[in-house]
Structure formats: C-alpha cells, structure tokens
Image (cartoon, rainbow, N blue to C red):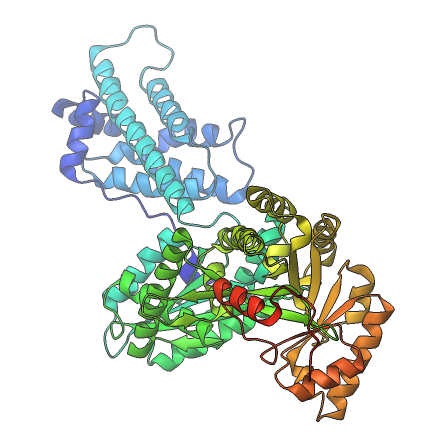
Length: 605
C-alpha cells in the first residue's frame, strides 16, 4: 500500500508542568512528597531496585514471548526505575508515555502499566522495610510519597492507552473495511490538506475513476462486489506515486489525490493509467459482463480553490467523458457548462417522470398482401419545457443515471395499458408493442407488473406485446429466458428486435420463446440495391420460417423496398413508407381514414 494511504497513531502529547501538577494533586501528592522520593533515591539506589524488580517482574508468568514485545517491556521498566532520580518534573512522565506507546505498538497488554507499577511499589517496600513488622514514620512517609507518584504515573498511562485506542478507532473509521483504502471521510481530509499547500506553480491533482458494470451490477453478489473492489484497489495501489493518496469514495469509485503535480498533463496521465489498471483487474472477475471505466480530472487551485469545488470539477469532467463516450476528460469551463446542462436535464426528467409527462407515439405495422394493421409499435417520446424533443436512448440513459429505470418502466407499462384502452374505446382493435431494455427483462417481477397494469385498465393480454433487443436477451440468458417465457405464457406477444445485428442468433432462437423477428433497418435499407443485404434478408427469412416465426421488416421507407420485402416473404412492414410515428389521436385519425369500416386494404408497392 502506498505510504500516503497509511494512518499512523500519533505519539502522546507532551505533558506540561502545570498538567503534571494537576495530575499529581488528583492522587493526593503534596510538595513534601517530592522530598520524600528524593530521599528514597538516596537511601535505596536504582541498582538495588533493579535486582528486585526488573529481573523478577520481566520473568513473571505470562510475560510476552514475542521478542519485540519483551524488549519494549524491558525498556519501559528500565525507565520506570528512574523514579529514584526523579526531581518532580514532567520529563520523566513524558519519557514513560513514549515507552508505553511503543509497548502498545508491539502488542503489550493494556494492564501492563498497572502490574509494573504494583511490582515497583512492592520492590520499594521490600527494600525499605524488608520483613519487619514495625514501620517507622519516616519510612511510611517515603512509601506514601512513592505510592502517590506511582499511581499518578499509572493513571496517566491509562489515559494514554485510552487516547491511543480512540485514535485507533478513529483511524479505522477512516478506512474501508474491505479494501483497507482511505474512505470518503478520509478522502475529504486529504484533499483539503493537499489544497492547503497547493499553488499555481505546484497544483494539487484529483482524479475520480468510475467503474461501470452495466445491468449486471443489479444481480452482482455482495461477495463478488467485495472481491472486485479488493482486486481493483490492490492493483491501483501498485501504480501510485509516493505521496499520492488513493481512496475508495463510492461503491465502484476510486479517487486519487495527487500532491504537488507540475502540470495537468500528469493528472491526465494518471487518469488514463488508473482506467487501464482498473479494467485489467476487473476482467477476471467480470467474465462475460460488459465492464467499462471512465475518469475525470481537475487541478486546484486553478479549477477550484476548496475541496468540495475541486471534487465537483473532477466529477463534471467524469460526466462529460461519459456523455461523450470518452475514456477520460479534464475539467474546463466548457465541461462545467455541459455538466450544468446535464444536471438541469436530469432534474427536468425526474419532474416529468413524477408528473407522468411522457408520451407513447404509435407507428403502424401492416400485413403484406392484405394491408391490415393489427399491431403498432409504441415509441417513447418526451418533449421538454423549451419545446425540444429528447431522443428515446437519451431518456433511457437519464433513467439509468438517476437510478429511476424501474420507475420509468412501471410508468410506461401503465401508459401502454391505457393506450390500448383508449384505442379500444375509439374502435381501433390493435395490439400495442412496447420496447423493453436489458435492465427491464432482468427484473423477475416484470410479468407481475405487466399483469397488474393490464388489470387496472381491464386490457386483455392479446392486446399487448413487447419488443426486446437481441443484446438484451444475451444478458444473463437463463434469468432473462425465464422472464420472457413468463411473458409469453401469459399471452403477450414477444418480438426479437434488431435481429441479425451481430449476435449468435441461431443458438438464441433455439432457446428463447419469441413470436416474431424484426429485421433491422440497416438490412432493409439496401435490400433493393445491395446483394449482400438482400442475401442477409433472405437468410433471416429462411431462419424465421424454420422456427415458425412472424417476420416484421422495420425502416421501410420506399415503395421499392416494400415490393422487395413482399416478394421475399416478409409478413409485416413498418416504416415511413407506411406511416411515421404519431400521437394516439393522430393514429386513430390515420386508421379511420385508411380503413374506415374495413380493415382489409391491399398494399400497393
């Protein structure tokens, strides 16, 4: 571990003469007792006491066998015998406190000072009066002074023990229990101290590194997460400069405080290195999972003069890097503005979510040959207060960043059921297909949520369906397959969206219970002009027919594409050639204008 990350217990504070006098007074120590102790030292010398006390006591039963602890005890006892030369000053107490602090560091028992002081008093008594039954007043005065001084020593050393234990507990509270790294509280202290000595010529650097595990993090076992944190922490600690401090500041977040860097380029270099090391350390633990890391950096006092502002600057850079799909970013004024815009957008998103201000636009899917519209895809739409529309992927990303993914899907399920009910009341009997994310289909409660939403609006299961991307179905396939199977067994249509875009489709079709495939628009776009795209569509259609699946071609924009797809055997068409996505009211008007009382109209490519 980097030296900057260790927390050492402080040495006991030096005892002043006034404080010593107060402590001696608490034990009943009087000025004449000082003279008594000096007299004892002249009568009974240190050499005589050493034979009676030091040798016998250090050889007692239960003495430590560890050489370091035994040596520490011997050094303490050697200093304790200097009571024979004590002149009443605080120096002797302070030396004893230092010796005792060393004993504690070596693992000596907390009861040792009391035992040593008791053994010293016994040795003093034996040397002074021996086995005589009669004790003279002078001898009693000498012993009384010794007792008061020695018990003042023992009481002081007990306080040293207590204070050291408090420091140890405090130090432990500043460390993460699993990784041993300084925690967030310690990070704030270190960053504040680094900024206190930073200057424009020698700034302090800060890097905030975030590890993203994607939707897999939701089902990651606590033991695996702790193992991941330890592995990443250990590897990061090996590449730290002397004097830099690495801290664990979040569940999957590390912060590096760099003291006295020359330029911001050093901070940027450290950010790249941390990201590389973190990903390497995480790879063996997150096998088969999507893992990425992003880092943001800042320098103080240039970017911010206080710890909270500098951390905010580094986090702004981190979020800017994430938004730009970049591995690392450094703070700059443009980053600050982007961060403010993102924060404003996130706040507005949460308000819209609370107020149910999201819409579902409908895009028809028509049957090849008959032209009938039996289903529509419900596409998420959100219009901000300034009139700008937010793209659906951006809405999903906002929900994930705000931890509101579950709340969003619940709102959309309710909205889907309400749309079906509104269409039925308008005399339009179509099924409504809603897109689900990888995170949505990881939730084992999803089928029950769907059932409750439909029950609230008295909507039959045959009127709803769900579109899942192939990538979503690949995530933790057994768990997802169970959820998808439950949806299909409940009577909901399940479609595999973006089919054929790079995954092992055949093996997944064999396992996953789906009703239809949607051919991705990138193949549809070139079906008439590119032989490879045409061959791909033909292959996908053969595959779908083998599994008895309905095929929907999306992104159909021209009559030529519609004709080619009809000729190749597609079942349904969706795209601008048929209709653009539209509001519910607009769709009802479109449907009535197109079909009137009849729902069978041939498609004329």
